[in-house]
Length: 180
Image (cartoon, rainbow, N blue to C red):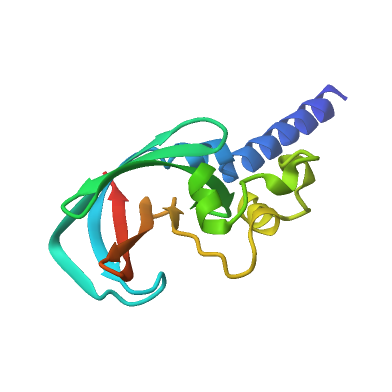
């Protein structure tokens, strides 16, 4: 009887270890975001278009710092740009995608962030099988809303596109970097 209890306990322990070691928690995923990303800038006319200008001298660096409440601070600088901004982040499978917040969110999307959650808990109403990103998209965005970047955690890459103006012509300045 003792032997059966011991074997059952051992199998339960092994099962728990296998399950917990195979899954990377969201804290581990988001913790992997923080750091310095070295890369470059390029210019495009559309968010998902081919590069129109890429100069090897357009070196860029993004320093990413975890804040609180699913937010990061990004200090992005180089020959083309020098700016600091705060973004919300959302897990989506093995990626972490980012979205504007505060007045930047309101200016781009036309309503306050969290407006659809005024009478309920934001995370308490996630659907079965929804990632944080899918939930965010369903609750905060209309079809066709643009988003500007995110993290490929597996390849340790960060990309972000800045909407810029050259006189009256808009273009995107795209940063792409690899974690140092």
